[in-house]
Amino acid sequence: MNFRIRLLSVLVLLFGLLLIGRLYYVQILHGESFANKGDRQYVKPNSTVFDRGSIYFTTKDGEKISGATLKTGYIVAINPSILSDSEYTYEKLSEIIEVQKDEFFLRAGKINDPYEEVADRIPEDLAKRIKDLDIEGLDVFKERWRFYPGEDMASHTLGIIAYSGDQVAGRYGLERYYEQTLGRGDGNLYVNFFAEIFSNINKSISYSKENKGSLVTSIEPTVEAYLEEVLDDIKNDWNGDLIGGIIINPQNGEIIAMDSYPRFNPNDFSGEDISAFSNPLVENVYEMGSIVKPITIAIGLDTGSIDKDTTYHDKGYLVLNESRIQNYDGKGRGVVPVQEILNESLNTGAAFVALEVGSEKFREYMYSFGFGEASGIDLPSDARGLVNNLESNRDIEHATASYGQGVAITPISMVRALSVLANGGKLVTPHLGTKIEYDLGFSKEIEYGEPVRVIKESTGNEISRMLTGVVDEALLDGEVALEHYSVAAKTGTAQIADPVNGGYYEDRYLHTFFGYFPSYDPKFLVFLFNKHPIGARYASETLTHPFFDIADFLINYYDIAPDR
Image 1 (tube, rainbow, N blue to C red):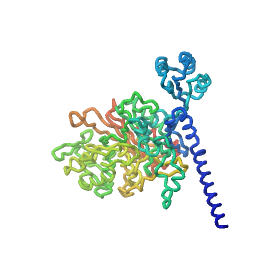
Image 2: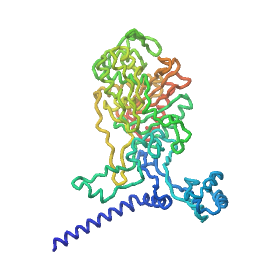
Image 3: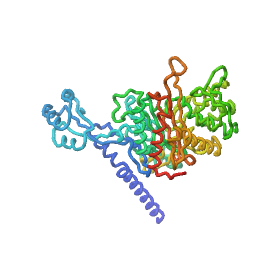
Image 4: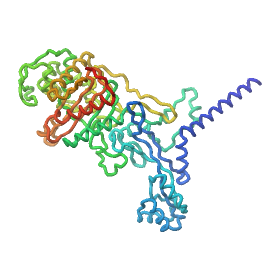
């Protein structure tokens, strides 16, 4: 008897705990959601209130800032079947909100229809005034919709939600990539608590069927805003068909800011062409030009094909497989040390290194830097590079690839490859998402796997030293070097392929610039590009000062200690 009493007591206690847990879930975790569902169900019993997980930016101090959230307002609706005086109703309603007269009377004339919406997204104060009119057949009902507080900030990164058929879901950017987490499907925010507990009783409890929550990202809103301001200035100064920038932590792949111009406003994109929503930093490939040369030099150093004291004889041109390549100015410089290949951006020097390495090793190393594969970023349509030329046995193909022509990759893949130079030789996965905060009340860090070593740490240190020399000695004659901070950087100017006539345009260039700082323990790597700028031939003219503006800002904003 005592055993039965104790057993019954335990069962009652467990049942009580289950009820308390369920009440906590309903009233605390999702009280607002159920209240909103209730607000609509008596109007349209089969409808659900729109719901979706949020996307957060993260400040340098760890504070979450909404990048994509929900906004609450009210729908104004009429019931034509019981609306007795549509003229009076329109007159009173139009004193409070703007209502299209013809549209209102068209809807009011549907006397067999019990529900017609005449306005939406009405703020609470106006909704209350409408409610206070106390007109039978006129009412207001709560609604929610997707809202982006920053307007066009990080628009290509965040993406949009839109209809596809009769379903609303993420269609671009993070909204699409994390749809399984952010989306709420039919609006049912939960699975049956008791079914979840008692199903598969011999297994651990799993919530994988729902897996719903909000996304926390590494985007720092102040840095993002500053990057966008700089890109706007580049547009104003040099025009260009497409302008973009990425700021990444090269040590772990976290993207701090990411933007391309032109942008769009995800709160109101009805007039945009569909091409405006794609992210050129992730989806489009480009021949990147001379910013590839440091990778070529690093390959030469890592294989032992060259060292810092290696020299070669520069005639200003090379003829390979009956094709001629030359330096940007066509001039030869005689006996040249390896450092000058970077300082003066010599195409013949990069080709010399690639030929010293040999086709097979050069190809293998280029692939190990991520050329030819998707970057792994958590954004949709992550494109692979066009690097078929690396498979060729012709020396000319590897020579042109050594200075960034003839192979094309996405900007994010380029940033990934350049991060290898900055972080001591490891290939990281660029990413935006850092944590999922689940609706059930727990959170989980997003893991991207261990980075893969590509070059020796000593090689990374040596190429960083050489790129620091570029800034201290060669870039705008050393005028932009920072007195108390080492900066490693390189410009790139690539010819743009002519898709109609073949070959390359004679007067169109892609300007690129990358740099990281401090050189030997970098906190940030900054990448900028401008497609077809007007009025300047070389990237050093258009992107050097914008880069150093960003560097100065980051050094001060993050209070980075001087390293020299």
